[in-house]
Each structure stands twice: as structure tokens, then as C-alpha cells.
Amino acid sequence: MNTKTNLITLADGQQMPQEGFGLYKVTGQSTISAAVASAYRAGYCLFDTAQLYKNEAEVGQALTDLEVPREELFVTTKVAEENQGYQQTIDSVKDSLHKLQLDYVNLLMIHWPIERAFFDSWAALQELKKQGLTKSIGVSNFQMIHLQYLATQATEMPVVNQIERHPRLNQAPLVKFDRDHHIVTQAWSPLGRGTILNNPVLREIGAHHHKSPAQVVLRWHLQSGVSFIPKSVHEARIKQNMDIYDFELSDEEMARINGLNDFHRTGKEPALVYEYNKKW
Ligand code: A2P
Image (tube, rainbow, N blue to C red; front, side):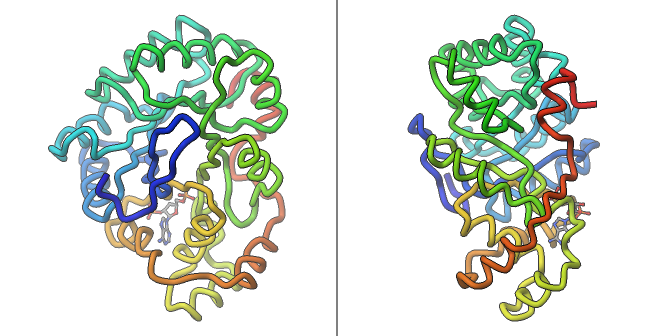
């Protein structure tokens, strides 16, 4: 994979780029095509979509238009709550593959843990992997309790757990739990949806390294050993967010950024989504 970022070897032996490109809330064929093309040119190979984003068809077209060998891409999608359950998951993933114009995805995830179909959806992912429709299986928004519960019935465990993570929600205990269980943590909203970028600590550290606050945050993710998937629809920012491989944060700077944690969530609380069986 011709990527500018590191490759992480997952517990199932597959390789995944550490930095990827997020496509949440990116809509419209021309916007998606331009963003995906800019990202690929800038060195991103991992593209992260989901059934919930309602853009799989546009992402599929944008990836097709790149005209690059399939092995050069790492494509992730996720099963939405409404499609959870054994057969619905299988059917919806086949529909996702059709929209994405792909024979397989690299990583397939349960988007949110829900009580209604907790084990059945996971059983479907295990089956889809067996059939070769995905290389790896993972989860998103799982808390420790969900992972422990899943382990009571799973024949194989997720290799990735994609969770909200940024300096205001650094998720240190869950990141450690994931690591201890050979699960790679992947940060969604790694920039806190852009809301943390005015923070004076991040600005000061950025000024010291001649980097933007966004680059400081992404470098913090990198040095924390997690995967991360920033998004932007602006070419300059897409490039900037990949330009984080020529500087290093000191231990003290890492500690200062860790110190910004105040448990602020931009998204939903996973325990409530589990209980209510849906995100909205
Ligand atoms: P835009 O798409 O207009 O560039 P997250 O990945 O945490 O969800 O954050 C995404 C948000 O952060 C988007 O609103 C995006 O805006 C903004 N963003 C992405 N990269 C940068 C950057 N380098 N500098 C400032 N804002 C950024």
C-alpha cells in the first residue's frame, strides 16, 4: 500500500494504515470525488464510510474513478442499527458492496452496540468474513462492558474498535483495554469535529513546531499508538492533516495534551445507544 502513514498489523494478520480519511457528513458526488482524489494524492489509502452516512454509492464511484489496483485501497464500512440482526446484516452488507462497487471491504464494523441484535449481528460479521466479503471485522463505539459481553459468545473478537477520541475525550482506560486485548483503537472525530482547534495549549505547542493545532492533535494520536481518520473537504487541510510525519511531540507535550481531557463527547453515549437500540 503506497501510503504516507504507518501500516499497523491487526490481530488477524491484515495490515491497516494508521491514518485514514473519514467521510462522515461528506455528501454529493462532486464533493466526495474531489475529497477522495485529493486524499489519495496526499497519501491516504484508508477510506472510512458507513451505511449511516448514506454516501457509499458516491464513495464507491470516487474510488472507482481513482483507477488504482484494489490492493492499494483499504475500505471500511459499518452496519447501521436499522440493519442489525443476522440476515439483515448479511443482506445490507451485500447491498453496501454493490454500492461501493467492491467484491470485499477491508474492514467491516458494527456501527453501534445495540441490545436488540447484539450477538446476531456479530455472528453475521463472522460469517461475512468467512465468505471473503470482508478481510477483517471490528466494532465501533463499544465500551469495555460490550467487549467483555461479546467475548462470551464470539468465536473471533474484533480487531479494531473505532471510538470517539480527541484531546477532550482521550479514552485512556478504553485505549489500554483495547491494547491489552489486541484490538486496535481507531479514533473517530479525531479533531473533536474541529471544535478544539482554538485551544491555547494546542496553539502554543503548534507554534513551537511550526505546525497547526490540527497537526499537533493528529501527531498526538499517532504517538498514542491509535489509528485515526480525520476528515476535511478542503484540499489544503487534507494535505496538512497528512503532513505530520516530520516532527515529534516530547513526553511533556504529550502529557499536556492528555491533560486536556474533560470527558466532553461530541457524539452519543454508547451505553444509552445500547439501551435504546438506536443512535437517534
Ligand atoms: P472542513 O471539512 O471544512 O475542512 P473531525 O475529523 O474531528 O470530525 O473534524 C472534522 C472537522 O474539522 C471538519 O469540520 C473540518 O472542516 C475540520 N478540519 C479538518 N481538518 C482541519 C484542519 N487541518 N484545520 C482546521 N479544521 C479542520
